[in-house]
Length: 398
Ligand SMILES: Cc1ncc(COP(=O)(O)O)c(C=O)c1O
Image 1 (cartoon, rainbow, N blue to C red):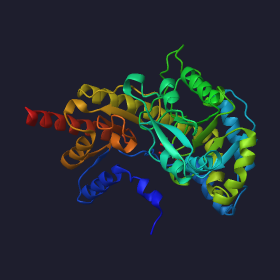
Image 2: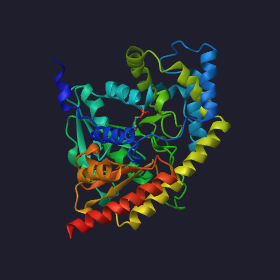
Image 3: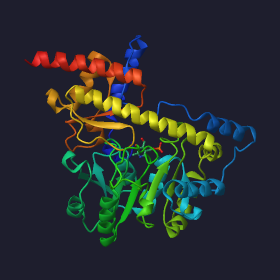
Image 4: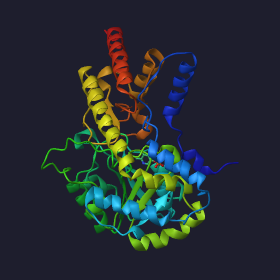
């Protein structure tokens, strides 16, 4: 009765685990949450106030399909402030979250039976967007030895006459790692040489931490737009701006692509949320930016606390990531698969984390994603419980 494509769409495995966490909480148990992929902070107060003003002022109608001109201009200015590059506001398209942007990009770029290369591990929804257009997602494994970066050789090996391009994320979910400017330059050259496109998901772009040593390849690098104006950029107000529930994002693309995507945006969405767009204008004001920057620093402290704690317990973190709010942790030393590890952790110790199998197949049994979207007190409690778990599990193996 329902469409065949649904057979190919896997539910998030972590949802079942989250159900278990909810059930435990309903029985009065305290659960430590390392599974949640969104900031635990509410939207900055001045942005909430701007959203309330938008409602009071009657901004409750459709807007232009590509977004309010003043918001497109403000987003273009953000690149000037943040990365020192000037882009025309006509290249900015405001979307219903990065998710809405990804749907538009897949509709814009993919024909049925085309192939889109993407990283494994990676954000699980990517492949679903590609499939909706009838295209085929092709996973390219990125292992710990290569810093969870997909290599040019692997991309070239996966490239076929049907390949349309490459979808990358920097910083990435679930690993938090950034693609260095040099590597991105090589990947861009490879794709362009093959007449393919590069989509770069920069949804975690604002959440990059301050410890890039001078002279490192990441120092001074902010966005793929510094390297190419042909690239298709996805971004969002969800993560750095703490606005997940407002459902607002943006894309930056070449101007002819904006013209081509306009009818698709008009037909599929009519416009992004008017209220969210008015609120988002306030997100770039100094009052809100102070809050966002403070939160970024808090995330960095949490990253360091959690990473030190996990390493002290003997768990290996192959790459200490430069951004996002995730650690991708090797749990193979416990002798458990990542799925067993996560289920035993929630059932026995009431700590929730996401198994690697939610992000792909490449060595998924080995890795667990820990999100530090929870306060320092809970991180400390989670580490205490994990210490007990690891000790007991090891004793039983002896
Ligand atoms: C890498 C990545 N891309 C896109 C999204 C979707 O974000 P949005 O809330 O902007 O739709 C997420 C959400 O977690 C993500 O992790």
